[in-house]
Length: 488
Ligand SMILES: Nc1nc2c(c(=O)[nH]1)N[C@H]1C(S)=C(S)[C@@H](COP(=O)(O)OP(=O)(O)OC[C@H]3O[C@@H](n4cnc5c(N)ncnc54)[C@H](O)[C@@H]3O)O[C@H]1N2
Ligand code: MOO
Picture 1 (cartoon, rainbow, N blue to C red):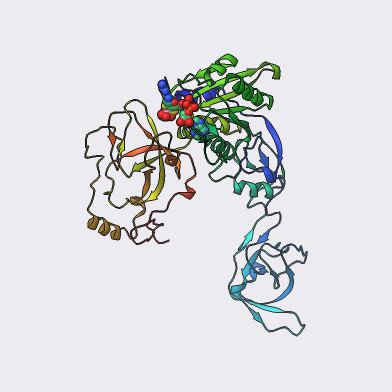
Picture 2: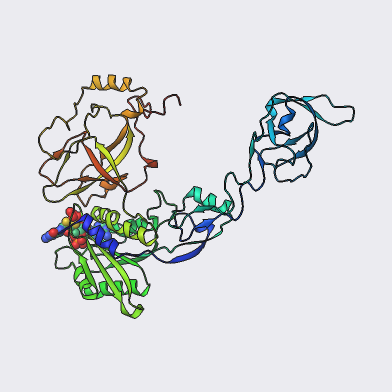
């Protein structure tokens, strides 16, 4: 059996970024740019006022001046401001020729009109040359590369692209991903009541959602695959073969199957893949997901193009974990991500976690950031320890209820450096229990050993969702205990 890092390397070595396609700006979110984007002009394109006030000649200083005109945003007035005069100006408007500073309206007062009927203003504070003016190109200079090929388009990037007028963009194509469930017991989610021996198909809906979401940031926003639902293959060679043929015919880049990859006499996926292509691995040292299978099919009748096939184990949690660990990085690489691997952070366990003596485990957990949760003493070590014994370095003091509440009161407000990421286990980790993936934003990397990792131990965690929706720790009484920068 190979390890997960080996499996990931094999998968990525068979995965190539897809070619470029042109999309409209409105479809760019979550995509990876396939070319550099230049600014065709400067921003601001003219010297622009930062304030509502008066455009002045700075050397004039404090005094009363006639207001010889107005410059408003969107209206270019060519009136020159000569020494001894000022012009009214609004935020974002072009600074008229002759003026070299802006005095905000708060530093002025209306003065009595002159005998000529011209409005006058008193400037109460002398301005320095350049004050409250954004020079031409100070935000973006003409010709600047504002985004580079390989960059992921997020929300701010959409704004940047719009700013420079890039409405047609070259991005990497989205991979086409087909999802197929297998098994005679697996029936449509709409089935009610279930017949004897039946279970509803959880994997297909879940894997379609996971592939469509991709990895451009939790909660959607593109970046995922174009998905195709292939339904459920019955446990016959003929039907399974027909479903794989449908994936080929639809020219998908990736086929994800679930179920039928372990050792049963109806586990037909591996033999079929072996007949039609090359199986690169069929068992991985991991929990859950041991029978994870990866194959490539070369489609002769389609110019020898390659289709990746991931045979995920049928247990829903195994499918979920395997998708994140090996399929998602492949989808990301196809979509142009330069670093498609899951991101790793460190987090401390909030409770003891038993280890598996045979396989390293990807333990589903919800990470949250904050001070030490009630009941755990402040961490004193940064040691990841796999021993079974009660090592004092990794075993926090569990404080009494009263002491815990005193500690909680003292945590108002907690210092920033007393906060860190905490990993809350999702409970029973059996691979059939999909509720163990509920609200999980990380897979904890629990080493293979005959022991227990104690509460307070620091472990590595792979992010499978963004942290923007992580839970907010609250102290007893409902008070938020997440601190801010001192003085904020
Ligand atoms: N003799 C052995 N048996 C098993 C081994 C082994 O090494 N030796 N490995 C076990 C492990 S680990 C896993 S994981 C499973 C994976 O088995 P399969 O991929 O062949 O999956 P199935 O047998 O088809 O189904 C397993 C389980 O999941 C349910 N299932 C399947 N598809 C779906 C679906 N779309 N939605 C919801 N649930 C689904 C299915 O009913 C089974 O309960 O094999 C072990 N066996
Ligand atoms: O690997 Mo299986 O996914 O343990 O249940």
